[in-house]
Image (tube, rainbow, N blue to C red; front, side, top):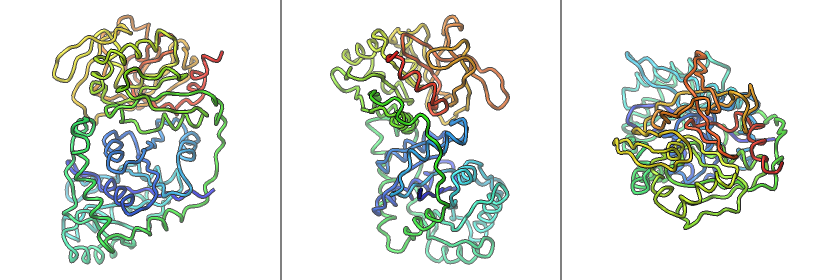
Length: 459
């Protein structure tokens, strides 16, 4: 099985759009068929990449998947053998005195997927400094694992003369093929996560990045685009992993609620439903009365308060949503929309509004941030999703939470910090066949549990 695959690991800089996003959009603009993956969790990267490329983005996080086998199953199912499968990941950032702090994600992804890693380094400092940074990055990668690093690409290069110096200095310190550079004038400032999720601002926030990518793709000889394919095909033949649950839920239809504010987790859940054999259809909250001819409904994670007006103010949508739990449909509300389903919820500006009164808690929203904490949950007594002792993994967004949930014993799950094993609280509430959590859960972390939950109505 041949899967062309390549990790593009870019240096990160505060306030600047990651160069890997511009490269991905430029590849798409140049006519190359892509399947895009992002290392996770990184909500900003997922949303921006989706907007500027128009492609679905799958999040690859070895921790959240729970095991290497499941991680490889996700990649195997989501990848395409006739497309360039690129994985966007952070390379690291610069510290004091030209030190370089290497992040572990890119080398880990490259090691597991057995594919080359292409570093992208900012080069608007002197050629000597940039070359030292590149050398430190490459040596740091080599120290982690035997990972092929065949070439380098530079970002924010001031002019062609500077690039020539970079080729000389970089070649002395790290003998890599140079694929070209992104000019400094195509560097873009980073917008906020909120701007990327607002209907009125999302396209405007993404437009400068789209324009930069189109300009980069149109510059003749600027970057050797075909080399991306060459490196992606250098991999060993993909060793297929077993797919024991593939197609086991065939015949079911899962409706996925679609809204610009609920688009931060990638398409992992939709991929899982398809892997299980389900037919997946989109449910738009703008519909006068969303469809009922589905067996299950999934509400993705995102900035839930941005969808509040569509869910709560539109009478048809509100009745449909509350009716899901009364009709005992199979429902999963993941993360950011959960606070809307309680007795009340508070917006980031402090204003409080009545919730849907489905659950006895209050919700709270803060301004969106990228402060995401990895968590592991386990069932307290066994429930409709997890058997006693089974676990799910995901992360805790800092900007959406449930407060005063009443009797904590009504919660389904205990939440732990995987780093130190300490309890972080409780989450998960159940009504009928519906499950709601204020955590962003990676459904691939327990495929068997999701399968059991989906087929509950068949029993």
